[in-house]
Image (cartoon, rainbow, N blue to C red; front, side, top):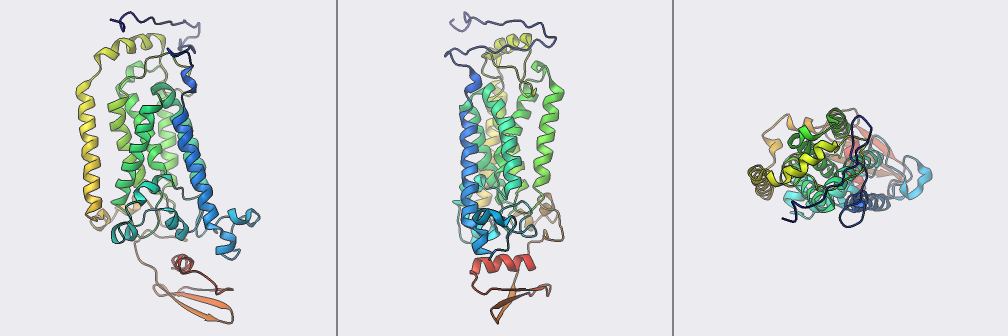
Length: 372
């Protein structure tokens, strides 16, 4: 009874599109400030990237062979080694990246929880976080921090599980999985509330632009596109469970057109809250549960789909002069003479002479992969 007597204050605007004005929520606060979940995840990921670059310490571990040497400890590996302006392979492994041998042979399942917080480099970090802020803040303002936080975390985890089905023996990072979970959520909200949106074209254009830009970046080394695919599917299913209708309180005008309702649509959504679709929610929840359980079973049994799918690696990689997409293990011969280190790739005969000999085994593997 209390619900039916609730007062709805709507101030009509003379603007043609009649957007909902900015008003206070029941608790006396403006809902535009409830965006702490996305902010927390963004701060964590920035902190993890800074820690990764500190551990990488290119100036010391690579004997000064770095990009932007003036940054000292924070300088980047050379572009042929990491085109994303980031750390070396061995340091990504050290920070918790996914790799087939580490996950299945050494059973380091804890990497499934560190994988979603790692970035391949500065380019990956900037594009990923700017997209998360742009999409996530708008979704969180409309649907609240709790629901968006749950979707973000579950999409990131399932993205890691899906990525584990297609791993190769190179490190993979999956911070994009959570972003694509938010994009899947946005698509779900658009699909199920299509007729209530006043700016459909803008919302679709935004979704497609962010999707394509981040997916193209995933063809470069270390960024895992399968995590993005898994996160996107998870986000769509979870959005169908949680976000069939928004929290029906007045919200600020949204210039981006991502989640924007006219006054009439706002009132219709208020009525629709009582007539929501429980069957669709249940079906979506069951499908998400099947996806989660199925991926867990396959990962725990150590099945690699790349063994049965020859074209699957090219969803995640485009061959280039500095890297390839074949899952071949690099092997090198080393020779030390006159304070120089000579490394020769056994597979292709390429070799390189380095003016140092004090080098760790992990760094030696990095250089061997680069030569081969």
